[in-house]
Length: 143
View: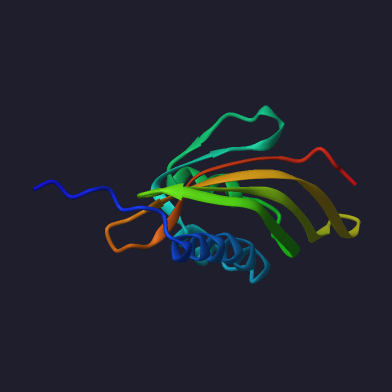
């Protein structure tokens, strides 16, 4: 007999929203290991500003925390999903996000704020855990 694909249940939508929230919370906690644990091994970032896609966890880590980068603190990161839906082993969440960063610059404290849209796709793994497989964002509201 052939098993029918598993359908997307309300509990799956809650789980996907939880991963979405955990992603932002890990950034605010300054926990790079927690951020990276939320991605699939073959995850892809499609960054803002037309930057080239970033393929795989190692490249994503290097993108977010490049060698020699000036350490920064994410002081606010809100992701508000407008919609979460899925089918079987894949799900999508899209919505609005805003974030604020601070760091110690050459001339003293510096900060940056931004807002925009995002879309994340999630894949359910063999342990029934949802992980981020694709992440695309834009940020038109440079403030």
